[in-house]
Length: 156
Length: 426
Image 1 (cartoon, chains in turn cyan, brown):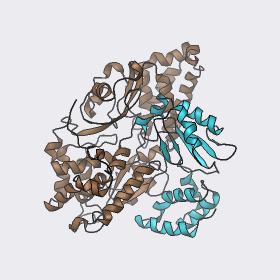
Image 2 (tube, each protein chain N blue to C red):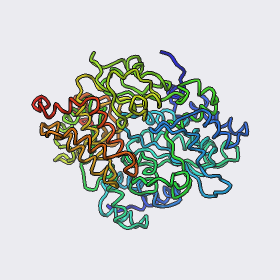
Image 3 (cartoon, chains in turn cyan, purple):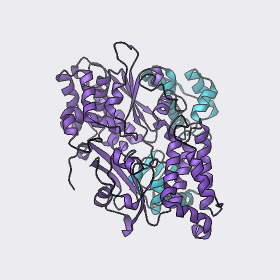
Image 4 (cartoon, each protein chain N blue to C red):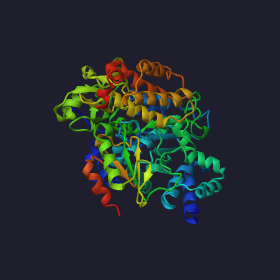
């Protein structure tokens, strides 16, 4: 999907926050990913390059640096299970197993029906409520393995 | 155990994130006081210096001193910035999230006082991309404050103007390093810059910039409202004030607790966090996030302040205690962290890029029963070669230190992976 006029108008406003337009690139990539299919496609890279007056490779180099940006199509709902130390100590592995079992997807893969993308992520800053996972940007904390099927089952 | 608190008091009120509740509780009173008492910017810096406030982001650098590094505005007419580091990503650390989510107006007030003190033109609050709710709360609070004449032009009728902007990161631990943060804020890969030049001389877009942690700035309104002398009644001589201790891992009541600096780690663990979970005993603990060297159980009486934890051979860091019970594998925790640092290394410096990968490979080998004789010594040699001062930033140090500390205190666990791998695999 291509960059829409509505997003361009939003970026015009966004870039007024900064003395240099390029500073708006990362927030803009977030908005593209949210609005244009859940990943940063080559078309988005090209369009953002044009909008920000950069070379496509510069936009790609930025997008590929940050773990929150996906450079290939993924399942509809993103399930991110924290694997860092505080969560690991309180059973993150069982949370990941439960998520794999429910979605049928291995870590770093999407489910066959395309509904879920499952990943293990580094610390999400919810260590005192470990273990935790993030589903479509929302934090689910103090999890028991049994919570996972219930939470994912309620996702429409 | 009772002690004076201030950091989390407002957050206990219903709807504490709204301007109405925050103002009724005294928010922006310190800012008003600064304006009404005709304090000079220099005297605000002086008060923060006098308070002895040390940065809460990990390094513990004196905040007022950092502010005083900004160039003289009379001889340097460049645009002046502050970046608030809300890229909270140090494993174990989750305090800034609570401050932004529950009391965003206090952070805004701190930013405005800092902006006045350093004669800033604009402030950027760089929030890690995953923190959606804290970001939205901050943005809503900023919008409310702007509509009320507290942010923007002619703040509270003082004639002083300053803009505050929210900025969203996209998930990279290295962007919590101050120069990596600035690169990222400029819309680039978060590659740390060599220092010098330091941010005060060459920061955001080459302009004078100060980078401060959320909790550091959060302390500022209280210092200005109640005075540096009041602030110094809490904590220790060299580390005054309270701090937010996030305690996680194998404890009964994990949480973020407000405690005075200098409190014993044992008090935090046993009195506040309810001790080790499941009636077990303590094996090891990280005093201040995953980058600080792990300490054994018999050092639990260490005082939680910068000098005391340093004297114990580790670092205070972010004050985030991570607790391992007697059943935990120190080698496994070392692997979890090695994997993390390998993932987060930005790749600029070979000691870090290669070192973190080799660390992960060796520890992985040990844990999968494939360890070779001499692997532990190899891990020590490798880690020693990763720091200090061998790389652009301290991520390499942060990866090396916990591994060396783990081997120092728990070498037999690493050696056992080689001598009796069947037990490890079982």
